[in-house]
Image (cartoon, rainbow, N blue to C red):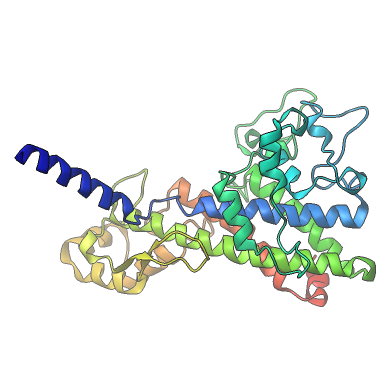
Length: 357
């Protein structure tokens, strides 16, 4: 009887633990990736409305003749909308790498029920949050393969060691931007083209551009916020990693010295809880701890402000710190830069934009 009760108690404890919200590094980025997919739709929609789905060449251009990429017909990029424009659901299936013609009817139905943000008669629904939630439910929340958009954009081309074959694609590695990636490169290229159109302020396309810019701005607010929260999740663990750890490159701060609001509610609707670190107070605590301070002084830090700068600039390769950041920190910083710069431009007026595009 006692054994049976212990088993029941153990199962109950497991169930309770499973219900607790536990922030996991990288967890929040799933919602960010869902928002990124919707953001790309807003740019595709604008390009098609401005130049026509059958003529625009900026994202998922239609291929029918000589030089069409493989595999075909997936890369034909033809849907059932005007001028064979992909519908919102077809777009989401296409960038997931699915071939519409070969999908089962029941799978097509799942995508066909998806609605683009602000596509209802009221022009306000579904909201970007509702659309992101739908993609999350369908598992459409992983980072996209850029080769689905451009078969030439392989990440190998951004490596310093890349050596193109004869007649192959040239290197895209830039020593001044060593952490650039195919995903950032493509996203920035798309955003530049969209903002170029916006800066021309053509009255004929003003409504569609303004709508998609406002949508993009809302989505970019969510993306940048989610990525910032995710950075704090990573930082919480890294602060505790050893100073001498050459791979993780932490600060060796004891867990009890870190001032954090665990499971802080996300600032984005449907976002996961995160580790909201009080950086200034945490670094003051670390510097007041004799053992921790001595280890950090040996590394080259001079005061708590130095430690706070290390955390606030996490991953920025243009900054020099006594403790360098990990390669992962620098990669994440570069990815965030893509979305942050997009948000800045989306907030500019057309007059401001025309001076910098």
